[in-house]
Length: 230
Image (cartoon, rainbow, N blue to C red; front, side, top):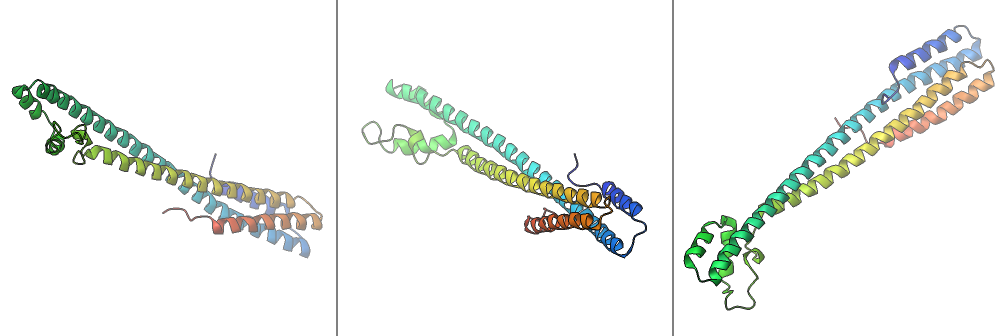
C-alpha cells in the first residue's frame, strides 16, 4: 500500500470531473471551478504528505537498525568484559592457592599470566598488605585500579541503543501521523468527487464545504507536523 494518493488517481478524478461538467450555467461553473481547485490542492498536499511519510518511515527504520546494531555490540562488549573478569579470577585463584601453599615458583608462574590491566590492580591490592590488614579489599577486582574498558564500552553502546530506539519509535509515530493526514486528504478527494455527481447546487455546495473544512484541518496538521529529514 502506498504512502499517499497516486498522481494517476487524482488526475483521473479531475478528468472525470471535467467530463461530467463540460458545460455549466454561471453558478454551476463557479462551483465546478472550486471543485477543480480543491482537487488540485489535495493532489499537491497528498504528494507532500506521502513524501514526508515515506521519509520519516525510512528514517525510523534506519534508527531502529542502528539501535539493534548498537545493542548487539553492547552485548559483545559485555561478554568480553565477563570473559576477562573470569580469566582474571582464574589466574588470581591460581596465584592465591600457590600463595597459601607458599609455593613461590607457582606464584611466579601465575603472576606471568596476569593481564596488564589486572596486574595494576593486583599491585595496588598487594600494597594494602592483605595478609595482615583486615580492612583490605577482598581481592584485586575490588580495587579502584581494576578497570574494564569493555564494561564502559558496553554501557555507552547500550545508552546509544536506547537513544536510537527512542528516536526510531518517535520517527515511526511521525510517519504514522503523515499517513493519517494522507487518509484525510483522500476523504476530501472522495467528497469532492461525489459532489460532482449531484445536480442540486445546494448539495454540491454542502459537500464542498465539508471538503474545505477537512482540507483546512489537514493543512493545520501539516503545518504543525515535523518537517521530513533531508
